[in-house]
Length: 270
Image 1 (cartoon, rainbow, N blue to C red):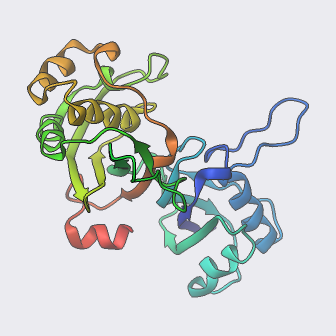
Image 2: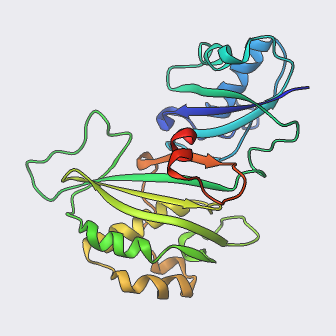
């Protein structure tokens, strides 16, 4: 049977993360996988399993989540994304639907992923916290030095043991990851975006990296201290785990020949 690859966007505010959850004796929790799987099954009038690439947590958003399913589909491919989205709630949509090879694995075939964490910062009392996009950005009352954050972010690039950026009970057999790119860039005078692309991520890794860069921006940690922090493999030396609402899964790369996409390919991923 044909295998289909879906690119999915969602506002994670009212979801219990991506992965379907069915507590014993209770109704299933509202998850992105759950509503997408239900919509696909309703469209095709058969039970379908939809497998996702990244298990985003409660409150985390995505514009480039990737999922796949195998089924006979009578809907024309060019209309499939729209047909599924019509059966989805307003906070999730299928951006793109494509045919994939029969053995395509959203998890196993991924070569790199990219997340972005957005922070609004100000110490001025006349600058109120974000209101209309409050679920998409983390607000801190502290003024941040983005230049210091960028210096520290560059020092995080490389292949190494990322244990200092992982929660203690991360559940992975190895904490070695390759970070291909890590940047902190201003967006206007009050916001900074932290973007990190890597071969894979540990539990809460991006939120801890963002918390560490926040500490650098506040002047509580020196950029030059990052290599020693990484070498220590000690979570206690890194910054706090920032809240989920500032985090967005941007893209997942499956291309051959390189570990991460070019600028043109990034546009296609998003």
